[in-house]
Length: 313
Image (cartoon, rainbow, N blue to C red; front, side):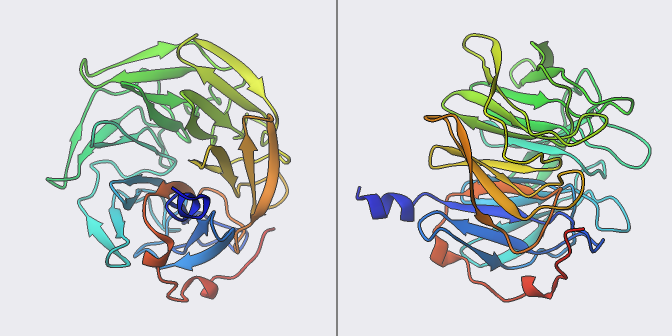
């Protein structure tokens, strides 16, 4: 495969929803083409969603839960690049924001989250084919603003807030046993962190401790059961969106303690360094980020995103 073809087929990075300084959550999405090295708007969601869970499975993008500015959401919508439209699907049983999504063996797992009263340990599993949700074993610890990723035969839940404090604890789910087990904890307590997988390791990016946003990044290798710090972000990012694309970890938006961010940076493990790689149009935190295995020319800019007010304060 040629270098150009490799980039053309690398997939598209989606940044979905979130909120900025203007107040109301976004329904807009922004998409990044690594081949073009540019961001562009795609079709808006049906609902505004901040602190939304986002994942891509089988060439489609799913946005789950969140908060629309008035209430918590249990609804889910799916973007199909073939139709360039978002379609509503069956709702979760529990309305919540700050959830994390992971996919292992086909189903989507909706993990933790919170509403205005409770941080949840609940975990629900969505079967794409039947469009049905079911409950699985809850986590050992409630986790709002948790990060998650599937790696190997497990789903990992990293950090979050239990309603009292940010967490450094980590647990993983075995779907064959329907059981969560705690593993070695991180070095830093954090919630609102992003999680990505690269080269068989988990990368835990940014987030908030109980006082401020974080620039620290930790890497966990399940083969050695060891955590280590890697290079820090160029700026603290709480509520950051994270995904892996072309051998790099991308960190999108977030809040640095003073303003919402529209900057994007990428981590190269070969040189252990983060570098700024551009900006999204809207400053936003609490957006969901995922890479969809579709082609750039399948996504048509319908010109809706420009209606949002840009305000990073």
